[in-house]
Image (tube, rainbow, N blue to C red):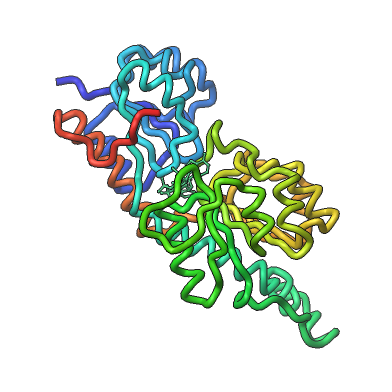
Length: 317
Ligand code: NAP
Ligand code: 8YV
């Protein structure tokens, strides 16, 4: 029997890509010099799409694939996928929850500590010989005594909260649409009020239309000149130009960012600042976790084509 045609928007791990290569006829859109031409040629045959946290099919791509049966995302965040267009055609979407939670929470903690301890400047102090020439490094901030607000207290947000409590930080509250059952922290339906109440805001909510730009100039001003922002969610959650202005004008103390509005393009003005820590959307990027994420893509596709229940389906919007 003919192998099903699968359109790959983003490559995963070598072992799992080899499995996919064996089972399906893969079309690597990310490698194609003329993506529109490849889509026009193979779209009519495509039965599955492999997407990622960064790249997903929009409505036009979904329409170009009339035989599309499933979108398997190599990532937990599915905001890059037009899920409404999928739902209209009854096309299921799968993602990779749980397996990356602890790595992403580690990254949030690491970024926060790097920001508070001015780790980038400390490293440069040694590398550039400034330590020997100019003497001791400047003092930095202790995390204990600071309170943190978490935007999106889901799997990752809760794992971040556990880490913050372990190092003696206070959870000042969280923002989300609903109060989370069984958590001891205060639910703030109003993000502005949460920002006013805490020293640090950590973002771990989904991207997409509902959260676009919710961290705006007013929220940054509510955080204040001693306030800090950590973003392991999506660049779209923050009004990036407003953030750059707030950082330049020292209206907030600093930001540590794993995600950006237009990846991999990061504005020069942001890259020039010394009150930021920047990371290239790498929070889930350990060999161990990415292998598990890639395996979930393989297993979900296998379940779909065998007519078995999907392992990690995303609820339709
Ligand atoms: P999750 O368990 O579904 O948690 C998401 C949380 O966000 C929930 O507490 C949810 O609470 C809240 N939320 C949803 N919509 C919201 C809205 N409109 N406003 C405010 N809060 C909202 O998901 P997860 O596994 O923790 O992943 C969270 C996100 O992390 C992903 O969607 C992705 O964007 C990001 N992520 C980034 C990386 C990276 O590499 N940097 C890696 C993995 C994940 P309510 O439903 O009550 O609002
Ligand atoms: C990326 C992520 O998907 O899971 C998510 O939502 O953003 C990340 O884990 C990962 O970089 C693979 O592309």
